[in-house]
Length: 76
Image (cartoon, rainbow, N blue to C red):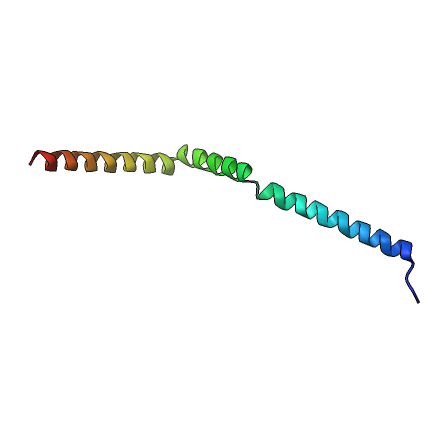
């Protein structure tokens, strides 16, 4: 039994709308500005946690030690 051309057109239109919605979602999810903002928010959230504060403190201490070593070796 042959299919009704109007029904086929409706199916094509529905598939086209579905693909357009999927494409819109992909464009939104992969937006560089959105990804940048999301990354910045994640880093800021991490830095406010005890582990983040400990990490920043440790990096500060290491940088201080490196600078002190360089200054000491420069004076030799």
